[in-house]
Length: 112
Image 1 (cartoon, rainbow, N blue to C red):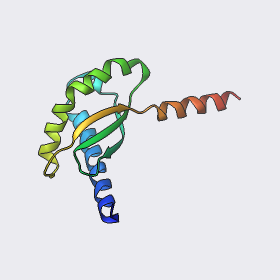
Image 2 (spheres, rainbow, N blue to C red; image 1 turned 90 degrees about the vertical axis):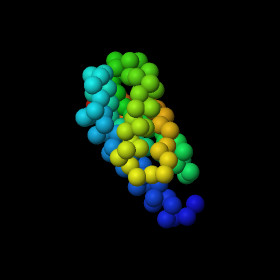
Image 3 (cartoon, rainbow, N blue to C red; image 1 turned 120 degrees about the horizontal axis):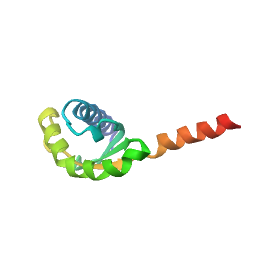
């Protein structure tokens, strides 16, 4: 992959992340989606798919997973109207356990 292409993908990833944060904050009416934080977006080289990594509290996790799967079409539709791409990538939401793990490690270290 050319360096120019990787910069383009990085810009698209950041643009998708910012737009999703805005959509979650302003256009979703379900209060269960209010606590979601988008941590990262990884788009495939051909821009056909994007993995959206998110965090949410453990108590809300079981309720949020099916909601995001169901709402991915809504988010893709909204992204297609705000992002100027020939094809809007299919969105796949993936829970990101890393921030929760880091906080747990910090708590354990503090107890020592």
